[in-house]
Length: 209
Image (cartoon, rainbow, N blue to C red; front, side):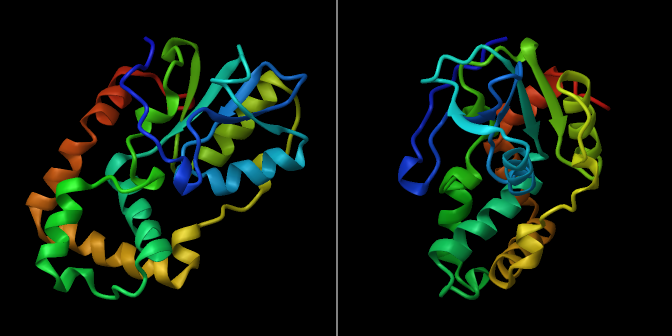
């Protein structure tokens, strides 16, 4: 199945669709989806000599490693990052009903809160290796690379929990998590917004699960 739903554009926020990493001698490429353990994955690949490319413009014909995450969980991390980066002075968005109506009407504000399917435009999902972003991701990633490239130590590298380690991100994430927990309508709106992500997740097979 080829993903083709239209790109959108977030270059002005720092992300260009098609961003990936690979090594000239590898038949694998890692496709970068923000908020899906990319803060852990990219530095480790750089240490092993992988370089940045764009599979749309560089003509790469390699098996793509794609990391997907629970859409609601990812959105909570993403919306926290968005507020921490661009609106940290709004310390209590949960006290502003008009603001909340805007947030939950739009839901996607930047690349951190965009649908995951938009980051894999043009890829054949039957030719991808899908990993689930959970506590087993580090081990599964290490196994995939070991099977296709060779021995590595990725499973020993500690995770980087960006939201948990940053005060502002942690603050906003807690606020929006409480809103989703206490207001079923907000939770439902977020789930409906990411319907295409949920559809993809149900259709594919994840490595190691």
